[in-house]
Every structure is written in C-alpha cells, then in structure tokens.
Image (cartoon, rainbow, N blue to C red; front, side):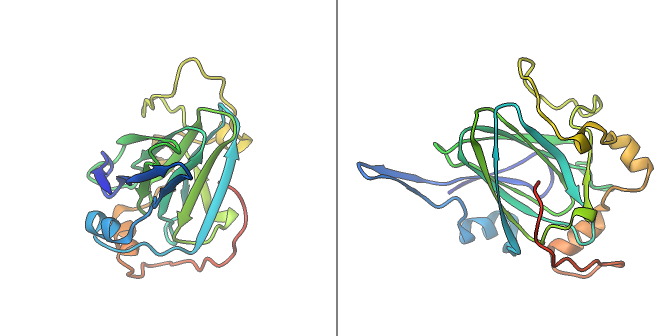
Length: 212
C-alpha cells in the first residue's frame, strides 16, 4: 500500500497493490496498518455508503456540521471519478487549499478525508460507483454545502463537461460567504473529534439514511 499526504492537512491518498490473474482481480482498498501509519489513528466506521452516478454528475462540495463531524474513506468501485478535498476548517494551516485524487477500479486508489473538510466528486463515466466508509451516521439536518464553482477556490473541473448538480448545490454559498455566516467547522474542534475527545455542543448522530 502506497500513501501520499495531500495538500489538505490530515488528508491522504492510498494506492493498494492489485492482484490479477485468469480469475479476475483481488484488492484491499483499506488496510488498517497502512492507514494508522499514515494518519496516526484508526478509522471508526459507523456507516457505509454507495452511490452510482452518470457522467457529469457533480456531488459536493459537502461537509457535516462539526460537531459531530464526519470523516470519510472513499474509493471508486466502477467507472472513473475526479475526487476533490477542500480545507474549509477555520484556523487550519491549509485553509482554502484543495487537492484532487483520480479514482478508478484499475488502481483502486482511495482517499481519507478527516473531520471537517469539504468533499466533492465528479463522475467521468456513466455508472460510476463510489464507495464510502464514514465515521458518523447521516443526518440530513447536519449536512451542508459549499459552491463547487466558487471562483476563489478555482477547482480544476473539466471545461468540456456538462455538469449535473442538485438543487441544493446550485444555491450553496461560496467559501467566504459560509465563513462570514459562521457555518464552517473550527480546526481545533475537528482535531479533537479526530482524536476521540468531546467538544462543546456535541450532537448525537444515530439516524442512517440519505445520500451524499
């Protein structure tokens, strides 16, 4: 398993060994020892998510109110995707930075996104299937979004793509607007949650439903 630290503090790319023969392919997209060696702690999995998207579907930039926050481990099981992490944690040394991981079922490249960061992906082929392991259960009222086309971020979306995005994402605020409204996660809270420490105003999350 090869690892690469991304431009966003605490986020990592993982590339596993893929074993192929006449029967097909075997791969382990998540490996505990490699994960802990890179990140410094284990991954608590409260829920697994599966999404299928047509070419041009852009989901995000999404994040969960912190606390409780949500960490994610993501890989592409079918098709191809451009996966993006954006640091929206106020006080982070990499606030406003982003990085891209190109995912497909040939390399089974995966990415870990710590609590509090923004996440988005673009499906580059029809029937692109993304698999997520997440650290907290989904609650619709805690889910928030940032405009994926915010010019201040300058995310490198393809110019020749016809995008398909949700109504929520079409009206999402830019990063500066969300910061001014006080809706962004605080870096110190995110670090505490990553290490299993409680923060003031913690919210219980035990309902599991709803898509990214």
